[in-house]
Length: 173
Image (cartoon, rainbow, N blue to C red):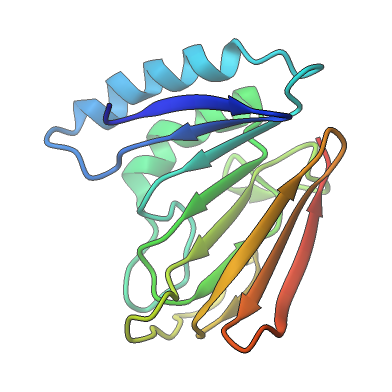
């Protein structure tokens, strides 16, 4: 399938396709899919909803810009149903955001979505354009991430290739 959802323990992972043949697959088909999938989650049993796709909705990379089509199509659905975390690649660097809702920084993770961009697996690295108020951390480096999820906490730890930690973020439902 081009997009799908799977529940694993305390999380519902929604894998999306943002490199589609027609725009309606993003603005209609996957919006409908997201509404159905996110609306059906029993947050008592599955407290975390995570999205994953290629192109970032929020980035300050100088190699690629934020995908505003995705942001305008999927962002309102993420906000309505509280997607906890959205993971993208595409930019050859690391970025994380503060919690965001309606394209604005909000006070807590319970109110917004964290957006993580990580495309530093080995390709030439990108730098950054001017920062934005929603950026928490950004670094032009290669590395990897370890994400752990329990019933009460999602922990995201971004590492450089030498194993040193860029940042650790704990997200609560």
